[in-house]
Every structure is written in C-alpha cells, then in structure tokens.
Image (cartoon, rainbow, N blue to C red; front, side, top):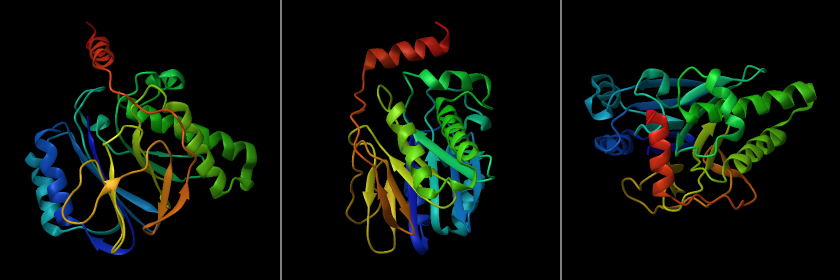
Length: 257
C-alpha cells in the first residue's frame, strides 16, 4: 500500500527532518512521491512517478527546507494504476465554485459501486482519483442545489456522507483538503497515527521522530484547522479487514489474468 504524512499548524513549523524520515520509507514504497503545501487558500503540488529516494529534485527540495502551516505528503506503492505522473498522489480537482480539493489515499477500493462511472472520466487510472472525483461531484450537486446557502457545515456533512458510503468493504485511509480545512479518516487498525500539541498536529502512517504518537480514532471523519480539531464525525461500522484472497483476485483482475 502507500504511506501518508500531513501537518496542520497555526504558525509555520519546520518539517524537513520528519519528511526525510518519511521519504526514507520509499525503499518499500517506490512508485512515486508527492507533496502539497497550502498557503492562503491555495495549494502547490509537486510530484514525480519515481522512488523518492532516487529523486534529485526531491533531494534539492529537502535541502532547501520546508517551513509550513498545512501540508500533505505521500509515497506510493502501486496497486491499481500504472506508475506514471497521472497516477501519482496527491490529486487535485476544482469544484464549480472554484475551490480546489486535494486528496491522497492509502488503501484499495474493492467495492467500487458509485465510483465505476469515473473510470471513463479520470485522467489516470487509480481508484484514489475516482474517490476525489466522486467527492467533488457530490460537493457540486449541493452547490448547484443550494446556490449561496451551501455553508461550511454542509461541506463537512457531504464529506462525511461520502466516507460513510465508501468505507464498507474498502480500505479508505484518506487525507484531503479544501484549501481551508484538513480532513482525515482511517478505517484500518494500526495504519495512521497522530501527534498532537506543541507546534501543531501531525499525521503519519508510521510514527516519525520523537514525541508521543497515538492511533487516529477509527471510523470517523476528523477535520482540522490551524492545528486544532474543529469537527469530529459520527463513528461508522465500515472497518476494513484485510482479506488476502480478495486482494489476490483484485490484482489478477487488474492484470487481466
């Protein structure tokens, strides 16, 4: 699978050493790397479909240092989708209001359901990109129905509804942003951790550096702004339980065997 890293803070924090440790895991997750840095409601995304440890560009970026308030980072171990730029996380999509949504995913969609139509609309071929396209379509439906009355709480509710719909039968560890808030969700035990307090709130698939890391609460959407949790969703029952035969069959289907 993939690995995720994210931070939300009120003031800028230096995350260079945490990123160095995170990207060192690319020995096991060698199919691409990506970073999204958020500032003043905009995002700057950098990504390459190469192993992070082999990227001269990433080495130069880390040498320059990272001082951020909100950011996301991803290393990919390809399951669905070829190793190329269009399949490298994070993915970005604008809604009809002009707001950009940026998403990265650690997991696999085994029960695609409502995501099937996006196979013919997406730029790449990952199930992760399809999750983002579906989320933005749901946001757009509400924007068009309610015009200017679609407030932030309704935005949160749409995101939570999408997660509750997609979680059953799927591994749906997600970190995404609307440029203003950071959304976090996991439904697989032992696959995403949080470090809170001090300079900000940090998330990682595996604990990094010093400090106390705890598991991200299971099966509920958490939303952060300026390092503080400002929304906690209701718990759902869509826990992902790994099934080796299910994984094998999906890979055989994807390989056309």
